[in-house]
Image (cartoon, rainbow, N blue to C red; front, side, top):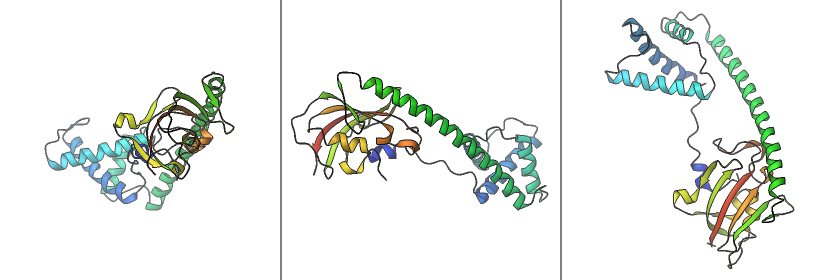
Length: 255
């Protein structure tokens, strides 16, 4: 898969754990349910003191599940109903069969997924329109050159070294931003240049790098179709249909 330099993708963070693993849900919910029921029996309906190791483990699992619920837009879960389900499960007195539980959860998760996809499509369309407007206005500036592909670039410093080819491996410093100024990645901030094959990155970089002599520092304005397109980048830092702005300094052709 093509993308911006690998360090950027690594910085996107670990993927969230899915909440639909039935064994994980059952084990974790049972532990949380035990802590919940114990707290209620002690008359502590809201907060409990974490005195033992299992208290801490129970709380940690509960906090993890809660955070997963929030990420999955399940933060409106009915806590009393959840507690009743936990108690009934422990007592083997559940009002639903295993198949019914599976169907209820799957149906609701599918509904949430459809709603999320609709929101993402709407946001993606807004990004597309805003991106086209940005590029149209940006392209009017005398400092900006627009290539036939739609890539725009602005020369900050023009180097005097050789230009890389698509087969070259290069070393660069870069900072990536969205059009609203949000920084999503920077080798400069990490204090270490990135090294990668020119042909292994997004199309806007492939084209831009091959026009830059070593020693150059350019600003690239990359249309979404030359970047991450309608899917956005892994990790969610680059939304769908985003125009990308990179300040790129070509330090060296490694090979």
